[in-house]
Image 1 (cartoon, rainbow, N blue to C red):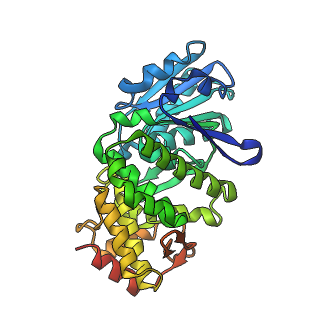
Image 2: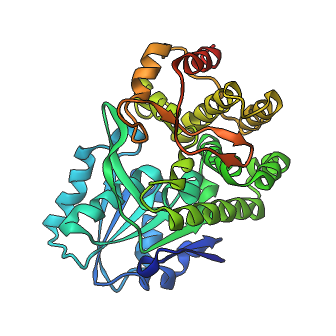
Length: 359
């Protein structure tokens, strides 16, 4: 087992990574403050892992909420189902909420924990590759709105993250590929050597080699933990973690939540950001080709949906947390391994990129 730490002073917390860590009761119970525990999960994950997690909590009063599975259910209505259970069971502010699932469950569970009685203990048990390398770490929580993804939420850090590599055995190929999109992102924004390693090992990762997956998860979490420790509330360098996300969120919103997995939309968005980076004079044609090729080899889409015309795409991009005074700002790449802070882009270059990658 690997143990990393997100260094946030008194709010420092561990990330446990390894095989069968889900079955190690002490990893979980040492972070629970009272006898009241609520497990939030979904219809897909509950039959697979709810009983295993509950078995570690026999000494506690455990309740659960099983939500529908899918990005389209990441709403205020779903959030209220969590609050209904907490209130019906008369859970106190010393209660613990465990988010058992992928990024949607982690985001909603964390937001519910942040809001209920102004904050209760929160533990992440991510069950998708994307959640293990990205959304479970760093404290971003929230829900979607019909007009914009993740526009309602809060920064709220967990007490611990328990990432069991073995749960990826039950992950379908599409979800696995979606997680690889976020892993590739880390190499692009912070670590060229890691990007090269991914180029050399992408087939091994797709084959679900446990050693390779553990290494990729560990390296991704190390990089995210470093960024979050430096910039918890995204006032600077943390924004670079959103490479491809302004484009990607526009795709998810415009096509309807759930039509594209988050990682799929981010893959397209990162290719768009790479193309725009070349147009701004940062990347070479060969750099862009390498980036697009790696996403393609990861079984991820690289072209934006033809159903979204450029005007609609730009309108959707205008609803983004990085924008300032109505100006669209995106993360670009100065080089493979080095990202820019959010920067405004001229409309001509943006339209050329959208037209090029919408064919």
